[in-house]
Amino acid sequence: MSQAAQSEAQNAIPKVVEAYRDFKPPAAVRPMIEELLRSVPSEYLRGLGAVVLTNQLSLPKRERRRKTWNRNHKVRLAEALGYYSQATRTSEATVTLHVDNIMAAMWPWLLYVPFFRYVVLGGVLFHELGHHIHAAHRPIYDGKENVAEDWGRRLGQKFIRRRYWYLLPILFPMGYLYRLGKRAPAAFRRWKREIEDEVRND
Image 1 (cartoon, helix red, strand yellow):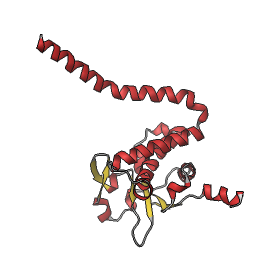
Image 2 (cartoon, helix red, strand yellow; image 1 turned 135 degrees about the vertical axis):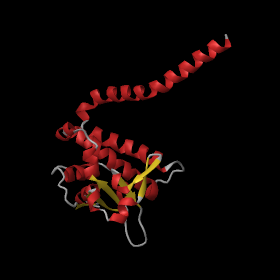
Image 3 (cartoon, rainbow, N blue to C red; image 1 turned 60 degrees about the horizontal axis):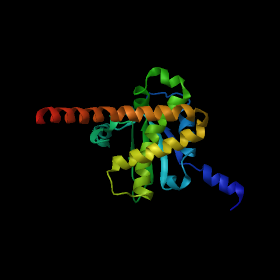
Image 4 (cartoon, helix red, strand yellow; image 1 turned 120 degrees about the vertical axis):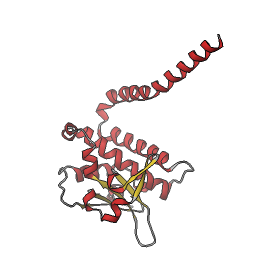
């Protein structure tokens, strides 16, 4: 394979389809999604026909009532930030992103900071791509949401290392403190239980 063909294969991404109804997204959304997709290894994108950028009003009424998984519970499809549709005999797999819901979930000022826009959009996109990787390429016998979460984190870290390498000396300590903060309540509860047990035993 020639160098040009290799470069083209590496940059090949699923088509990005915009299908909005009575909604105008920020102009930067589609280019950002395409850049995020280019950071994903091409083998993980095989079999993914399209990434659809849409809004909840574009859904048919019957689809709006349909439910999809969000972490450990179900939500109405219209309220989801995004969802993955597996391939069938007649269609390829797709990832759908509700851009209006994603924008509504962000603090308004984040829209003006490219790094945070990438992080939020990438977080949703990479999570749904995690479902595709799990279903089509790397089946793992674990909860689907756990696997998608893990792949989403890996893809997100890869993108940040590539796009924002100069921020890594700041981001790594921040990430460590964030993870430490998430573990702190559980550690405090364990410590509290141990103290209470000691008091009761005395």
